[in-house]
Image (cartoon, rainbow, N blue to C red; front, side, top):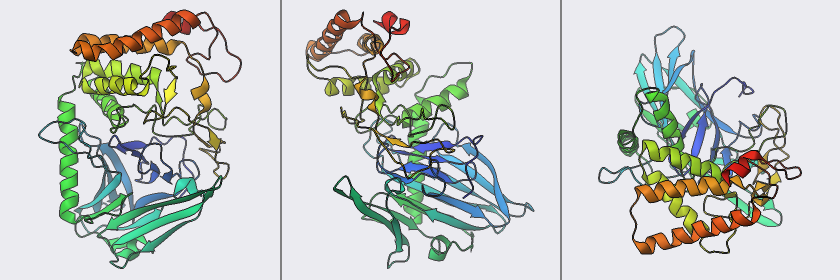
Length: 425
C-alpha cells in the first residue's frame, strides 16, 4: 500500500470491546484483537511496510464515497467504476447486539471485524488485499488456507523478554480463496462477506448469519441513539461524537479508553507520541459527565462503579490512569522495528505517566461523583463505599494541594505549580 497521507481522516468502527481504523479507500490500517489494548493485527498506520493492513480494491474503479449509516457505527464505502457502469459497497462493522430492546451492556461484543461486499449495479470486479502482521509485526506472521478453502488462519510466534509469544486470527469468507490468497480479481455477482475474528469459531459464518449480525448491530446502535438527547443546534455532530465515545467504553468493565490508538504524535515527526489505550480518571470523568447530560445515563454510572471497584479501600492512592481492567502497572516500552506514524518514532506500548501525580483529577472525579449522586438513587449501604472514597480524596487533597505536580499537560520534566491543579483542588 502507498504511504499514508497526513491529510487522510480515518473512520472508526468498534463495539466497546475493540475497534479498527478505516482509510477512505477502505484500507483497515489499525486494529487490535481481541481488545483495545491487545497487540495489533493491522498497524500500517504506524508502519506502512511492516505493520500490515487489509483492503478491498476495484478493477477499473475506486472508492468515491464513505459515510456512516445514520446514527450507527456502521461504515459504508462505495466503489464505482471509472466509466460509471459498475459499483459496489463495503459495509464495515464490529458486532454489537441488543437484548429485549435494551441497548445496554449485553456481553455480546465479539472481537470480529465484519466486511460485507454488496454489488450495487453492473458487474463490478474486485480483489482483496489481506496482510495481517500480528503482535505489532514483531515476529513473522504466517497465513495458511484451511482444508475447507474458506478459512484463513494467521499465526505468529516468538519470544519477548524470555516469555513465549503466540497469537492467531481467522478470516472466514465466501469469496474464492484465490481472491484473497493470490490477490486475484473476482466478479461480485452477489453479496459476499469477510469476517476477521480472534476466535476459531464453533459455527463458521454463513451469508445468512452475517446478515443477521449486521441487522442486530444496526438495531443496537439505532436503539442507543434513540435514547440520546440531542440539542437543537449541532444535533448531528453531537450524535456522531456520542457514538464515537460510546464505542470507546470498554464493555467488560465500564472503563473509558482515552483513544483507540498508540503513538500518534502531537506533531508529525516529533517524539511526543504516547499510548492512549488506557483509562485516564480526568478524561473519563469529563466524558461521563458530558454523556450524562445527553444520555443514556448508564455510561456514567458504570464508569463510577468501575472506579469504585478499582480503588476500593481508604489507603488506595488514586492514580491518574489505569488499564481498562483496573491494571495499575502500565510499563512503557518502545517498538523500535516500526517506523512510526509519518516517521514519528518511537512507537510506544504502555505509558509511564501512570507514575505521575496530577492534583486536578481529584476535583474532576468528585464533580462526576456529585452528579451521579444527584441522579441515581442509592440505599445507604450503596452510598457508604462512595462516601469512603470521597473522604479519602478530600484527605489527599488537604495534604498535598500545595505541592507541585505534572499538571493536565502531563509534563515529564520537573514537577511545577499549575493554576489548573490548584483550582480543581
